[in-house]
Figure 1 (tube, rainbow, N blue to C red):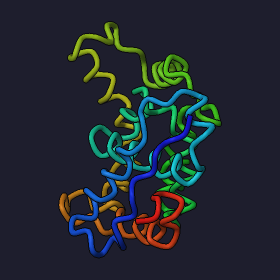
Figure 2: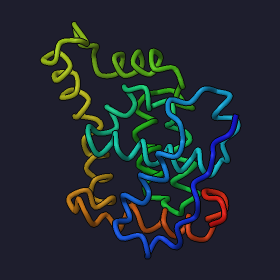
Figure 3: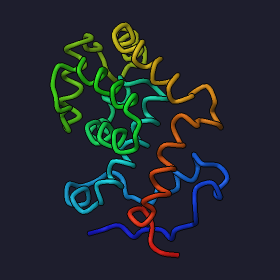
Length: 185
């Protein structure tokens, strides 16, 4: 069970919107991953997808959202990917946020990550109630907020369509190692 690689479209600088170029590449991988599928992905591709998924979650709701949701199972792969792509400051911020959980490596189990987060920041009385969940996120923000803000600044999150601090290192790596991510044209 392996993925079918998309055809190499050429260097990223020829692709126009770099963020969409990266999203399209990430979408060539099935999600959610089974353990078998994960084992058959090239490490670079698994880490690339983990970085893209983590970034989407973190930019939407901070590290708390990423770790609380199912996608948090990719936490450790995201750190490896950030390091692989030369994005060490991103990896350090992930390390700081993950360390707040009090358990490393970050558990793959969503239930276990939720238990750790609820233990650390106080469980919402009713996790399905938006007001209770919002209160939980506000409590988590006290500890995670500064890490989230550093991530947003580093990733140029205010520059919605020009996130060079995030996309350029990844595109540079993909361009140099295109055959890992794509098949020949």
